[in-house]
Image 1 (cartoon, rainbow, N blue to C red):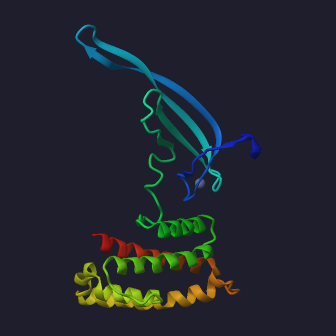
Image 2 (spheres, helix red, strand yellow):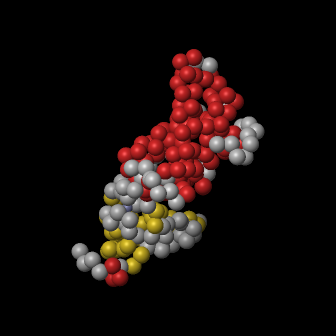
Image 3 (tube, rainbow, N blue to C red):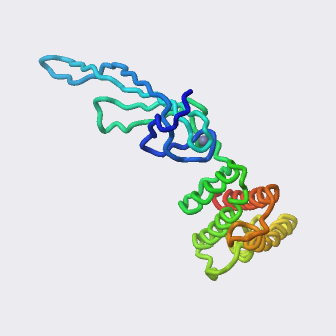
Length: 241
Ligand SMILES: [Zn+2]
């Protein structure tokens, strides 16, 4: 493979890499096209009977290289020559028929801000710089809790921190009440809620949020991210049920 980067064109649209969380234009390594003819019923009139037309479906195969992880993706674009209304369709041939299905956080929250934050977190893990994701995952949970309260019309002071919002949600959100009523589960959830009181100081004094000098080590940064995303995942599952 020639590695002269300038020689390659980029795709016009952003493509979700099947190997990593990046969604960017990809470098086109090679392309191939094929037209596959097919026959279709054009008209059926009393004089001439059935009239058939022949048309072609156009396929384009592209071998693309992700600009972030440098791995190869192969996709097939399908477009019909005749029917302009036919939307171009993209199928992934490699590495996965659905590159979105293995989204690492398994979170698909209908909120663009949180989605973008989570994409940034995944990117930080992929690049082995989890410290870059600590502030982001913190903001993800904070935003998520506010939205969860707002969706249920649970009033909260705008400057409430994660700990207070989490406690409020446990106390007031209807979908959590049955769970909270179980004594052992309740104790467990309250312990987790208490643990979240430490999320702010860690984020404020050991992450990149405020230009701190004493940063978390990689293992602790990843642990922080994992714990927070487990909390988001749990809450999301409960609230969406
Ligand atoms: Zn990639």
